[in-house]
Length: 376
Image 1 (cartoon, helix red, strand yellow):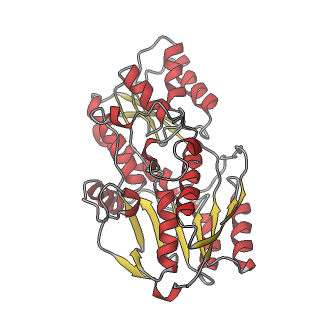
Image 2 (tube, one colour):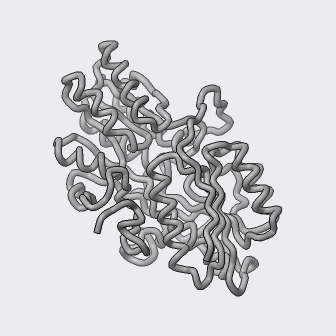
Image 3 (cartoon, one colour):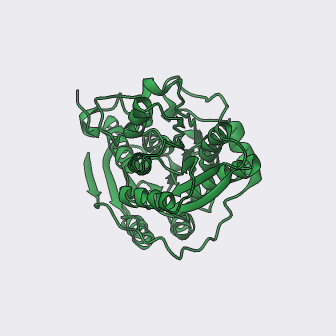
């Protein structure tokens, strides 16, 4: 199997001026995802990347293709550690199936909508792909390109969504509302009415990020907490720390830091250390550096997750479709656990690098742990 990966370095994304075409504050979806967080998954025990929530299935018989297949992957980019871990997962899962996959073609959009639209058009028109996996950069901009691709070949979307039902299935953990519910309810449970929360966010316009914030904001409002700021940091550690320092220097009291992604959570905490202030209540994610700091400094924290094991599922889903099997759909909803104080120790692995995500589900994949930067 050959890999044709066009992988770019970190990109500087311009976030200002993004318009919002979608509604990301849906009470019905909020309710549904709250219920899904406590559902028992179906599928093989101990393999959450192969499990699903709910009973809905779609028939992929018309896409059955015998013999070795070419799977193409249009990736939004590799612009944060979460996506680096996920990409290793996807490639290693494909390696497990090299008897079935003759080629995995990976194209990186470098965080740019226009490039990803062109990437998808080129992959489809090239006629080489038997199935197309898409992780969209942003929701609205990529929808027309995905709809055009659906007319030509089976499409599997994962991670971020699009505003169309045309893909065979859309693979994702419970979702952004679930992430925001888990972290928002934890923070609300630890603070009195009237306390201040600073929200740190990656970027606007991405459904799974917008819904994280709307869910948490609703919970904060209901609890009488004050959101003193909602700031975009672009997953940049220096910018994250500078934003927090600015609030501290302005005399703002910060009782909690809520984050829509935890990759810069330790940078946010450094601002409190430098100012000689106690740590706030904080929501991070399942990244190793945050988990280690949480344990070492006895933080009041929670680690909601959007597990990177879903990158494994994307390959499994594409193969199931090309095998003509029934697959969970139109949404393939994966379990979405959170790390709590009670489970924290079990997710810390000193062999792995600080930016590794613990819920990778990658421990049984070829090349682990070295491929993910770990030590044996």
